Length: 102
Image 1: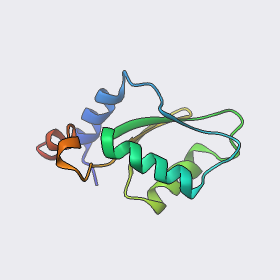
Image 2: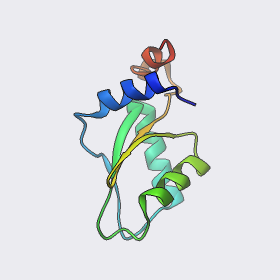
Image 3: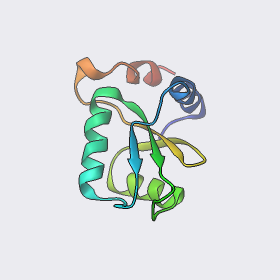
C-alpha cells in the first residue's frame, strides 16, 4: 500500500504522460490485464483511458484491476487512471527505488 507522499510523487511523475492503454467496447478481459502487467514491467507507471463507448465505469475498472492483479491505482481523474506496479527485473526499476525510500 502506498503512502500519501509516495502517491503524490507518482501523480506528479505521471502528469506529463499520455494514456498508453484504453478500455473500449470489448471491456475488461484477462488478456487485457496481461498486457497491462507486461507494460508495467518495463515502465512501472502508466495511464489508461476509458473510451466513451466503454461498457464499464471507472470504479468498476479500478476494482477489476486491483482485485485480479497486484497493480495499484494511484489516481483517477475523470476517465483516466494512473497505475503503478514495481517491476520484477532490477534493470527495469527506475521509479520504484525512489518511491521505496520515501
